[in-house]
Image (cartoon, rainbow, N blue to C red; front, side):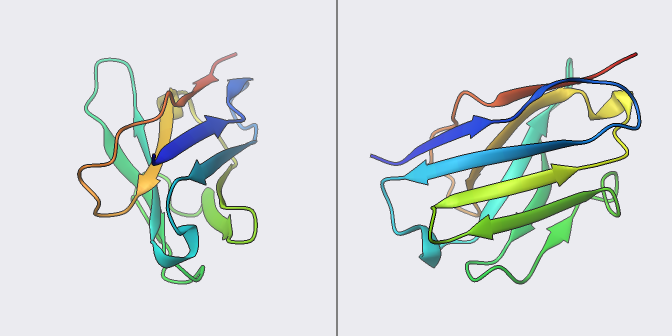
Length: 116
């Protein structure tokens, strides 16, 4: 059974940093590109960042470019999202999943709240 367990969220002040982690299981992690999505209050879910199966091919939404960094550790079946210079508009539930695998279920996500 494919599963994604996100962690690392929390409350942070504007300008602060957080590192999110996503532990994946139930498939051969190293064979798939991975992605981070987020859904803010009253907003649609959006793709934030993606990374190729071997760690290259990173790409970011314009809204986070230069502030967020996606990475992965294939030995640990884990994908990360390092977030810095956080803004209130980054407040959202963050999810990870395989890129372009539409039938994957969503995990529980991890809440990130940016507020003073």
